Length: 155
Image (cartoon, rainbow, N blue to C red; front, side):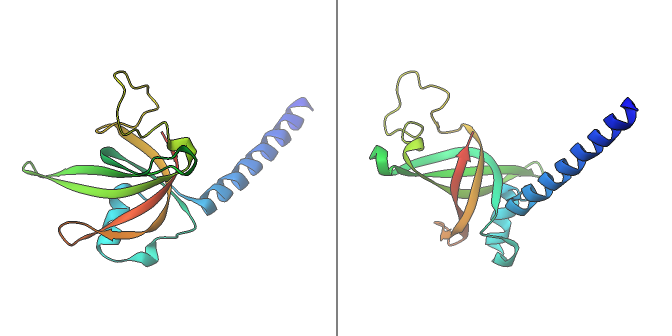
């Protein structure tokens, strides 16, 4: 009898977990990588991007630009890059601009770095994992288009 009750309980938990997984997939597109997003924008295949979904992206910080330093209305732009080797001779670089808005980022992106910045400070060359929403694209120096996303959360 105890085993039957335990089995029913476990079945109910697994059904709830599957429902939560479906809800997660309705909100987050976990299959889209930084490379995928860049290639979609490069090929102008915007039908493959759902602007209502969140995307989990990774890369390294190439540069930061503070747009509004006021803590209450703070905004900054991060140039996030990811890359991969093409053969042994060259690297393909995938570039995304990440817009950070809100007071929660004012202590993470700094104009002047302290001597010993803490782990919360976003530094050039540091690796980032972020959840973001697609905003659009912008033109890069070479005439190509790169994605612009709004950060929802960063680690």
